[in-house]
Length: 464
Image (cartoon, rainbow, N blue to C red):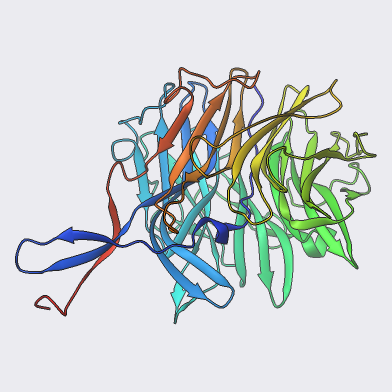
């Protein structure tokens, strides 16, 4: 079985541009109270050996905080576990789902299975005087029953505290209960990738890197991390760097102490230039034998495309359809974003993401497959009877391909609440009709709750 890998979600500001208000009736003491519709999105997925699917993401309340550079929605960390047919597993958490409110803006970034349950990595932010504060990377563990492991970190939550704005991209289980966390750090006007190792109690492990952290910008010039995988006694971290108008896809291999493995590529670092690429927009994924793929968005005259570089286990770039690149042009849009990828047995490569027209008036989720003997990709995309859909993560095993993301439709210049989207395919691209509703599941982390977030009393018409 090949494990699924990491995702990246582009253009979050495109997801939410509407503030919804839902009216609720009072019992006489108050007139009307205002609430906010619940929304959900899926950002990460793993499928265990029993074909149970764990989906991570956010349960939001559709309030919008505006600030100079954009807007964000108040939300909580959210997970759900589904059985093989796509039904919520009532033995997990609260009747199938787990919700954690850590800050004003919480979202799961990645999931990893270990012997005890699931490791969750994500990012939280607080509201600060009308603006968002710095992002903070957090990690927590859930046991097989979906309960928070309060022996890990501070009452179940471990934070990194690297002194900047941290965004988690990937988590991985270590050998002895330790946890690896990889992401991107913005500090003092400089962006760089990082990897941290936490011990089984959620503390930074001083035996790894610099007091538990490897700063990849200083070590190898990596500015953005897009994925990570532990393989044997080493760690592969993939991402990109940009300098003087040049962008490179890159992979570094670290030993258990956090030092570069000199026998890999060029003294532990493998790079390939990707012309016109956007370093911060992409994904990375890995085969079980240690091959690595890095997919980056490439700007073109008519929009954008996706270029993928594949490195073998020794860090050597493999020939693609265009030099070292394999280029994907999704058929139903002009702007293509690769948010997740995976290898299957080393013979096929999958990419999932979203494609939009130039005006972002609609959006399609897509799943693309390229087999070793093929010159190009086979692409499946669909609206699912909605005007917007996107895939944010991907899990591939010997039976199926599972994609998660979000979907919503437009009506009367509004964006109604979204659902987390879970879609299961067979390897030939057909939907797995034994899962969900003929292969498609619209997941509600809040299990039917219509109004989320605080309720505000209208004091003009009620006693306050």
